[in-house]
Image (cartoon, one colour):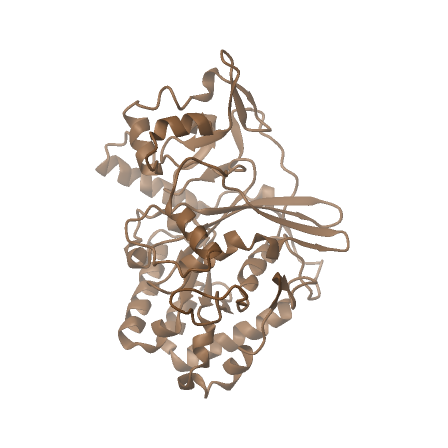
Length: 439
């Protein structure tokens, strides 16, 4: 069932956000009471030329050392439609918003557009970080125009911030064509945020899409405290090594089972699971030669590079018939060769079909940790375009049955499962943290 976006209507209270926003620690921000505001100059002065992380900001907020740099919005002049504030005495513009509960600098459209969260899962060295960084650096690939329809895809993270984080290092490595290091355990991982608009010829729709990464070493530590179960999609990334190596295979099965059990304990069925087989070029090895249908899939790319990456198969809209055929072949491959993994994955989506994808971020072997400037990824567009098509933000080329029931997205209430998660986390907070701080 697809969701149709309608134009947003502000709440009567100008201090409320148009939409709730969940920060990277799982705190739900609902109004200006949940944020502090600043600007780049003040933030630079606050950092004292040191790396200012969200964790450091949170500690400084708690001990009151940000009073001259971060402002509560109560005494400021504000325009609720622009989310820019003015300090009345100095006429200083304050255009950066920060979650007072996590220290995260918010995306431009946080609270202004409906948030769609996609959470990555997978073991170490599966390609999570590379793929998520690739989307940040290849935004032009997803800027699309056909007839009177237009898709705009842009990064929504404020630029030129006087802070450095692991996300910035990832982007620099990719643009330098250097193979990035695996995400270290304990690294502060902020979401990759994108503001997406789609004009269908009549109406304009918009969404704030966020990809959240997890260090592979920490994937099996996402229990009830973790905010990942508040996501709209859980993306399971699996490499050939995860499947072929017996020890890695067992670890993967245990990871999938852990997520399944936690979802059941939280009664969390709102997060749909998508399965992504990465490093598809490694499936060309001789050990997979007998998988004829899989081998045929590997000869069909959806991208071409002429100075920059361009869509081919999906240039007129997402080919849903092609998607269903490929997903079925990948599912059959896993079921026949790795039945334990396939069964565990299918149990994650008990009420609907699981979609399977096959991609390669590089589609080549790097030479001394450096990949070629003209490299041509394999079908990295499909995962993202599929998600957008499910929310009416990218057209599909299959026949559409207009008699089916459609739901307007802005009328959908927050799922009860999310409310249960928040209630559960609040109880845990009261027990272990004294209840003084919102999660």
